[in-house]
Image (cartoon, rainbow, N blue to C red; front, side, top):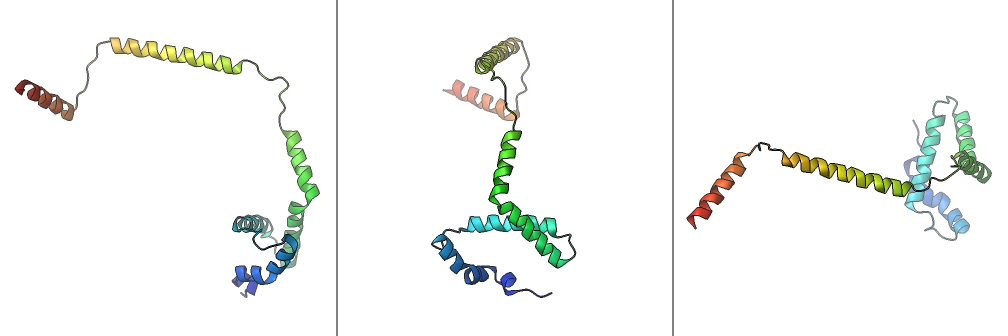
Length: 147
């Protein structure tokens, strides 16, 4: 398996082959940050995954290029956004008073919980005391009686 220089040295290839074009097009080299390059790599990886099952290398490259061109086509991007916008559900009538209803329901739940808690605390119950708690109570009691 042979590798091209671009595959062996991607950053050097990027600087040597594309930096001059970028400087001319964008007016500087700092406009293309590492995050942008990483995003481009991820997009290319997704396209490569879609085209990887094509056996003919020339057809694979052509298909990859066509998909990439469609993803970067401004008209297609606009139509996709428009379609997504129109496919979202539109509510006919906004519910009114939902905040007040929610607040009232919360107050009722809290009051019910407080009543239940008070009722449970009134009932006699036995408490399981750990060895640590019993020793602490004994030592505190011994200490208070010795003073």
